[in-house]
Length: 294
Image 1 (cartoon, rainbow, N blue to C red):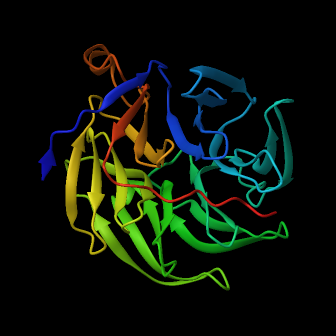
Image 2: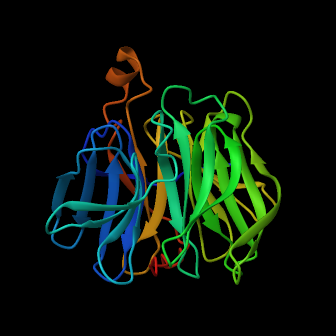
């Protein structure tokens, strides 16, 4: 059910693959990455200050860290990132013997663990992706395997369900989640995007327990109710819609990342906003981003 929303063309960027938007309520700042360009972006809407950091390798996901700075899931595994020095401090690489893979997306659960999944750049349709859990003691655990492009991760407000996206299979999975132990079980399809409508990419979960999924190559964000039914469809003026997150003082602004990499030359000409950042006032509030406690 498509609804008319005023999606604001917020920042002109031209990101090749803009991804992983992350809102810091503490600083009223949004972070996101451009994976192939090796960029971390930081923008404060209050003072309209945009900073771009070249970190020298692909970063797929960022998360806030309780002790300061960010934790990143990268081409070389997990690392801490410090903005003033623009330094990545690497500490764990569970796929160091698989040079064709990299981390692609991630999120922190409400017990402070960082979850992130991998993919193969050379064979994105293959089952090379794995889902990992980084605990607060720095230990890394393989939680599930056999995915194509590991993507959007989130949790229901009651912490009983974890969502995880397998992009090239067009599926968002749901798992039973135990917040005390960090264990997942009973994987089942939550949403399957119909063929021809695009594929699910990044996601976020709102305070009502509805899942907002960016539909790559579908020109839209879908909001799914807890039963996996489309509650609303929001059109975005470019095809490769990659991810979204809630931000703003009231956590009621949806920030949307996009990219141009999958588009051919004709499509790029017809989509001048491809790779830019968009914003939408939703009338719905998101949830505070947890911080990694390690």
